[in-house]
Image 1: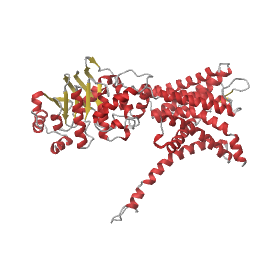
Image 2 (image 1 turned 45 degrees about the horizontal axis):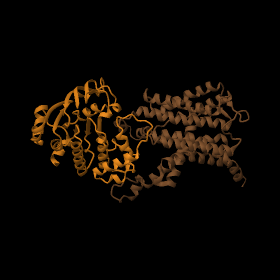
Image 3 (image 1 turned 30 degrees about the vertical axis):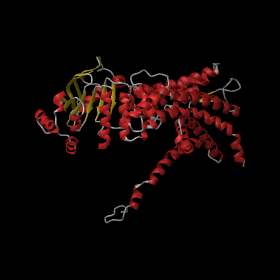
Image 4 (image 1 turned 180 degrees about the vertical axis):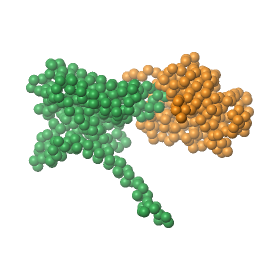
Amino acid sequence: MLELINIKKTFNLGTINEKKALDGVSIKLDEGDFVTIIGGNGAGKSTTLNAVAGVWPTDSGSIIIGGNNITGLPEHRRAKFIGRVFQDPMTGTAATMEIQENLALAARRGNPRGLRWGITKKEREEYHEQLKMLDLGLEDRMSSKVGLLSGGQRQALTLLMATLKKPEILLLDEHTAALDPKTAAKVLELSDKIIAEHNLTAMMVTHNMSDAIKHGNRLIMMNEGRIIYDVKGEEKKKLTVDILLKKFEEVSGKALSNDRMLFSKETD
Amino acid sequence: MNVLTTFLNALPGNVSQGLIWGILAIGVFITYKILDFPDLTVDGSIGTGGAVAVMLITNDCPIWLALLCAFAAGCLAGLVTGLLNTALGIPGILAGILTQLALYSVNLDIMGQSNRPVSVDKYPLVLSSRYAVPAMIKSMLIVAVIIAILYWFFGTEYGFTIRATGCNSNMARAQGISTKKSTVIALILSNGLVGLSGGLLSQYQGFADVNMGRGAIVIGLAAVIIGEVLGSVIFRKRFNFVAKLAFAAIGAIIYFLVLQLVMLLGLSSSNNKLFSAIVVIIFLAVPYLRNSSKTSFKKAAKNAAAVKGDVNNA
């Protein structure tokens, strides 16, 4: 499905702000893999997802999705393979457009767009059914502007948009971090449901260690632009937060430095 | 009384002028409101449209073809601004200023001199200020057709990509939309309309002039903003897309009616640019001031309980 081969990326090369963000990241996902990614501040978690999405070109290495080498494709041209949900609920949707128009834009991800209608009557009926699944009552507000929705509603809608056309890979970039705990739990539950239903391959960055353990079949820990721990299957199921913290110290030689992560450990 | 009769007599003329500028206003609406791009190309591209139309008409080209070419010339101007912005990374506002400046020379080159007359007596012009009532009806029809076409266009997949690009370019790219391409397309379309507006305006006033576009963007903005304020008062939540386009044109009509009125009341014609600047300032400032009068630090200080160490009034 997705394969990253020795991806490297340095930001602000040759300046005092030079930062080696990705230092040889290699990973191969199998179909249906749901990988959670954790790590300290600046470990390269979101950077890895951005490399896959093509927000900027990588310095070296290859990105292969479904047998296609997409390393040289700009963001909008690789979008046909990729569904994305962002940390900021404002990023994933167009606020001044209607709910149904946002869905119609997402349904055409990767298709050539022409002078056909931007949304058809048949589509409206389909979206009505699909919005029902979110269980947020959005199916009755299809012609409302997305800007009127709450952050949680917008994330749920973005999730639906990202998977409306089945992506080769779904990228969830701390997509519950900006939500209150109750809404975050609901959006996570919804993510699980959608991923399972469509048997999607997904990567989810999270700062919440127990979420990272609870969700998905595989867990990756990153530090200083490298993958330092990769665990799946039965072994992953046995993980606890304490084991993860110990593992981190063992591999990186220091305590985990992510305030939000440590905070979330105490609250869960 | 005298002022009123003069005003009423001039009404059809001012309405036609408003409608012709309304086409420009609709073009400005596309960039300023839909694409969220402050495009200053307009000051140049309206002159280009006018120059192209007059030169073709005076060389016995059919009127419809001349207008089509005025539209195309405007499109070309929009393409230049779009490429300066997307391919060369020049900030939008500067890209427009550069194109506008360059077009001043281009317009002079097209006309060969700074002013070219086109007489309604010699050529079968679409509209002319000489026949104000037919001009009003014809410009009304043209505006209606343009609104209908744009309504259709912005309902298509392509139109959706432009709206998404203007609203949230991150989202647009994540949905596979080339935001650069849709920016360029919107600029082309917008300036095409501005060029068409210039082609009609030069026929209406009987000449094209290298300075005819000076301050055009401000008039366009005034029209868009007047229309928006008025439309949202009248329609409130039902202020839909068609109404927004129509009210950009209606805003332009109102602008010219008010301009006529203040000129009748004694404003000299040399002050009309000052007038357009003041209109835009008022319409932009009023919503801001009204909002800040509801909530301000001064008010907060007044509403705060009197406590020791009060520096609010220090």
